[in-house]
Image (cartoon, rainbow, N blue to C red; front, side, top):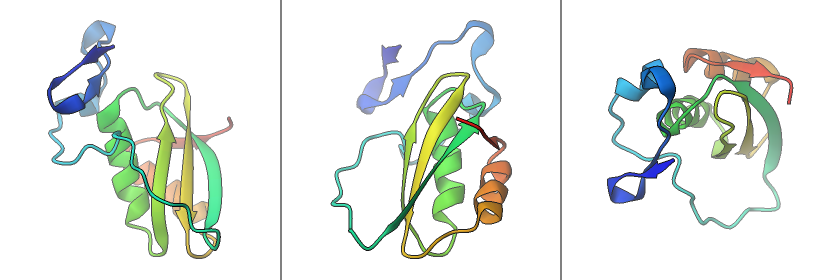
Length: 112
């Protein structure tokens, strides 16, 4: 790993990286956020296959946060493996809605 300007972490991959690395994102969803976790929030954790970089994380996070009721998303990136994704929401979110958002981002929900 190399540290890029503005504190962004980039993973140098053989073969040029993943297809989403060429996409410019204006937010850095991979940066840790310090927020208090509300005890009234519902938390769901699942696996997402195929993410390899911060840009991948940003795409998945953007799609998941677009779901009505989602208050936060955390991603534990596992380069080229199954990454852990935690969604916090004010009410339970259906598995179908989560899978659709992940697929819209170009990835798939997988067993952890």
